[in-house]
Amino acid sequence: FFGNIVVVSICTVTFIVWFSHTAFLFVSSAIATLEASVSRKTKQHLEEEERLHQAEEALRRELEKEKSTCRSIQSTLASVVAEKEKLNRECDELKAVSEELMTMVENHQIQP
Image (cartoon, rainbow, N blue to C red):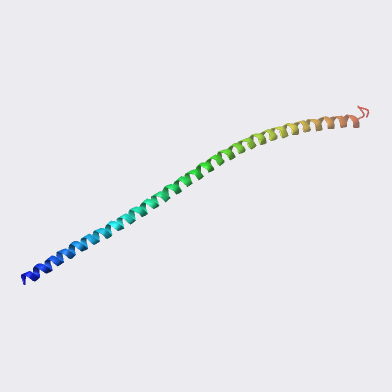
């Protein structure tokens, strides 16, 4: 009877050791798989982050270029507006002189 108990106990212990070892290997394999997955995802994330950083830098350069163009256009527009105002004043002065001359012609003060 005790011999059977010892044999069963040895078999049970052997099974438990085998099962524990198998479970350890399974868990170790699962951990390795998860670590590989995390490593792969981390690499993908870093690559995506770098790609986005480069895109952001390209957009910043383009924005600065467009701001410079805008400033140049604003400056040119300001010059055009100033020139237009000057021409309008000159035109008004010429109209006034023309009207004065016309009045003088109509009053026969100046012979055509």
